[in-house]
Amino acid sequence: SVTRNPVDGTTTPAMETQALPLPSPDILQHVVDVHCHPTDTDVSDGSMDDLKIKICAMSSRADDQPK
Image (cartoon, rainbow, N blue to C red; front, top):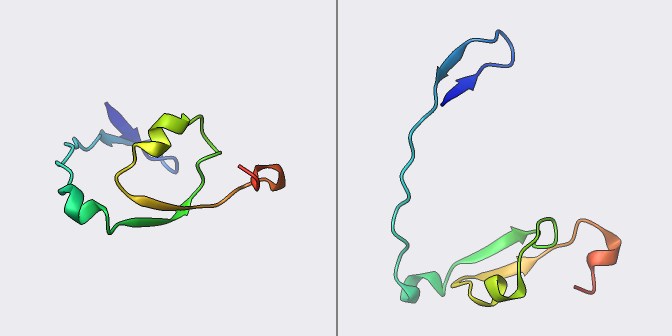
């Protein structure tokens, strides 16, 4: 795939990325995402429960506050 420059329309090959293995659970338990909007996308409750990190959930809309 390619990346297109929005200014001049030129294209360059997209960077290839590889997933790195996650740190051990002993390390992950200390990670906190302090800017998380879980109601902005369709995320199942089970997925949230399975997270190995802690989150500080924020809402984008006032009606999301109780969630």
